Amino acid sequence: MKFRFLLWAMGLLMARASRKNPAFQQQLQNKDLVFQLQTLDGKAARHFIVKDSRISSSGGTHPAPAFAIAFRDAAFGFETLQAKNKQLAFMQGIQDKTIQIKGNPALVMWFQGLMKYLKPKK
Image 1 (cartoon, rainbow, N blue to C red):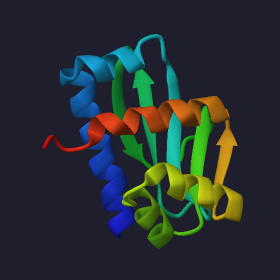
Image 2: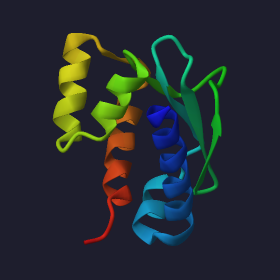
Image 3: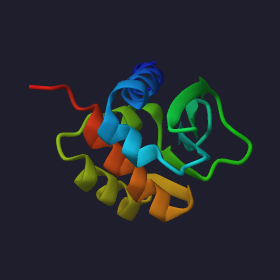
Image 4: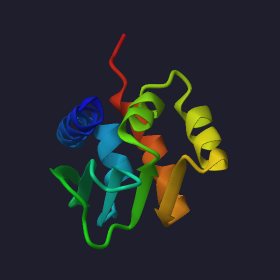
């Protein structure tokens, strides 16, 4: 349940950033794609639609995402997305095969770059 809530909250934060944050909007320029975050079994999934420099999201899987990040299970996905060092957590998960990347790996790197804009301001 926490994983689904986290994905929903990420969708809200990205949608807001795509409307209000010029640096975030810059990252979305010339992108027209769908990506998704999910568990390996697909029971918990959310897809994010990037179109016209905006992001929106919907629950469930998309039939043809540009890339998908699949976590071993919801608890592991929540833990990874909340890790202090997300990049290290992702790299370890990929090596351990507890995180699977489907689709374009270059877009996964682009997505990880977007995440820095979602951190709360200090």
